[in-house]
Length: 65
Image (tube, rainbow, N blue to C red; front, side):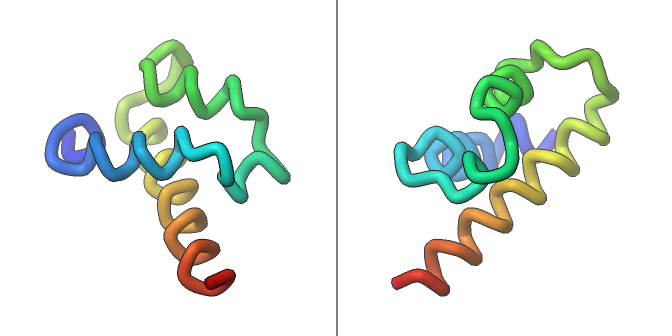
């Protein structure tokens, strides 16, 4: 539930950025579909994927300063 409540805004902001690192290895449409709950997977799996992508974006942003 945290991915759709208190962390929704930061996760969405990072994953909708035009400078996303994940676009090098994940299709952008898939991530947008995950954010909009259009992928038929469990909520837990969806949250884990989004958290992983968010973590990679935060890591990349801090490393590539």
